Image (tube, rainbow, N blue to C red; front, side):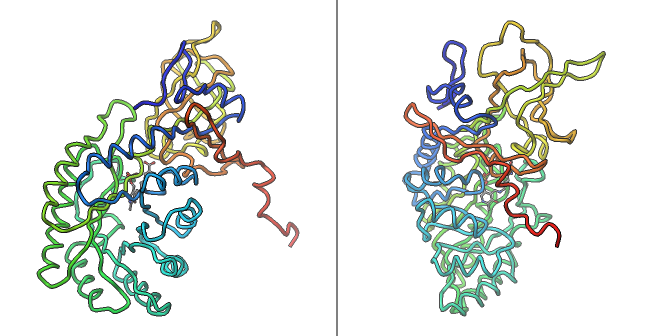
Amino acid sequence: MNPFSRQDGELLAENVRLNDIADNVGTPVYVYSKGYFESRYRALEAALAPLDARICYAVKANSNLSVLRCFQVLGAGFDIVSGGELQRVLAAGGRPETVVFSGVGKSEAEMDFALKLGIGCFNVESDQELDRLSRRAALLGRVAPVSVRVNPNVDARTHPYISTGLKTSKFGVPAAEAEAMYQRASADPALEVTGIDCHIGSQIASAEPLLEALDSLLELASRLKSQGIGLRHLDLGGGLGVRYNDEPDFDLDTYGEALKHKLRGSGLQLVLEPGRYLVANGGVLLTRVEYLKPAAEDGRSFAIVDAGMNDLIRPALYQAWHGIEPVNPAAEDARRDHWDIVGPVCESGDFLAHDRDLALAPGDLLAVGSAGAYGMVQSSNYNSRPRPAEVMVENGRFRLIRRRENSRELLALEKDLDG
Ligand code: LLP
């Protein structure tokens, strides 16, 4: 399902006019399609059936409360990486026992918070973290459910910044080290070994590297079993890639079939932590053209828009490609050119796209595509710019799910000017 389609040349989201949203809420604004999120979740669920599987939505991809609520209602659990994300899950009505807690740097305060709530599992990423978790659990009189994040040394063949499963990465521990951690954990009354996990990277194009990682997890699980250490679940992380430009969408059916085949008879519940796959192509960022600076001589042509790298940092940070389309048919005075679409931030790295063949005029509304994942969550106040608003489209209507920040709020935390 593509929720964005044209009617009489005008781009709509689930039949809602993006022009109306921009006129009402202003720009820049993120717009999400709830129907799209639901359809992606159901497709993944269907591909895994009849496996005993739990989909733990990776909160980091898009943590707006209304987005979390959407997945909570669908029956998802949640993958979190901070106490702040856990607060969000609770605020959205998520149940702590459906939460898995990943991340290399869990603080004592974060552990205590999660232990008191009784979350489903701590994905432990180092020897010292295991010690700390044991101490905190013992102190609080709790038993911490534990999975060790294995780094299977598999190349996810993705951008180096979002590749996490190689031995050069800070994430997880090698299988041999994990085995020793399991032996320690299983003898510790403050810990309960429940699972095994990995997450080898993000925006992975095909199932192969994930299945390679699965093989190495299954091998360790069976070694542990022979030592009397039984596991209840296997968490293969997220990472399923999506189409930004001309890449193929991740082949869910192949992945699902292979998972069913490999997990048959294992007695393990499958856990997945998808983020991008569920939300990326259900969102656009709307931005307006402020000025055009056509090329002088053989220079470049710039379309300066009102969204910058502080609103969507993916192009600047990962050289990521996002589709950009005018919401309306070109005006008569539009100028056709190869435009660099750039923001107002004072950095040459502040761009949303390079070299796009478009007919543009000042005031045009543009939709930046595939902005549902790692968009708003990575926004900042750089250049003291208030972060954008967020809107959800549902059943032919739209509603504001996060209002735009204002400049008063940006100053509110700073005090004591003269010391
Ligand atoms: N689980 C863990 C432990 C993770 O670290 C991640 C993502 C996920 C699940 C979800 O991965 P996904 O299914 O979304 O690929 N900011 C980058 C992406 C960073 C991903 C970090 N970890 C971007 O904009 O591309």
